Image 1 (cartoon, rainbow, N blue to C red):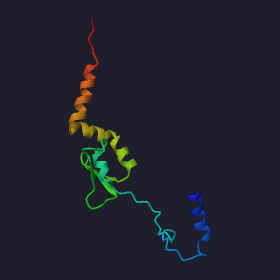
Image 2 (cartoon, rainbow, N blue to C red):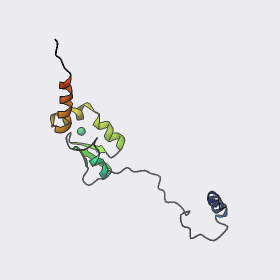
Image 3 (cartoon, helix red, strand yellow):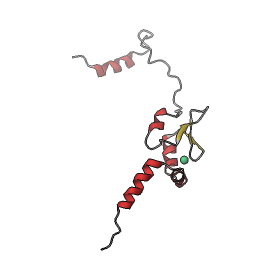
Image 4 (tube, protein in one colour):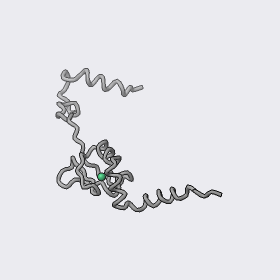
Length: 116
Ligand SMILES: [Zn+2]
């Protein structure tokens, strides 16, 4: 039985004492801690953002809402936040997001007000 989980420990223990490793991955890790969020193309096809979210030209850490004409940070949280603002929702309505609105309105109409 070869225990795979042990090999990591052994490697760590041997660090520095054995061969200046060709294993590479253990070297001084570049300060990669700052986590910069970039615009993800898949957001554009996300049903929640479809039709209004765009990459910001020239700055991949930003995004644009084209119906509000607003620049947003390319953070999912920020974008989701924007999507739920009244302003955005209203603007979406008035700019005619056809399909969904139509369906919603139909559903509303189904509530029957008929009294007999
Ligand atoms: Zn918006």
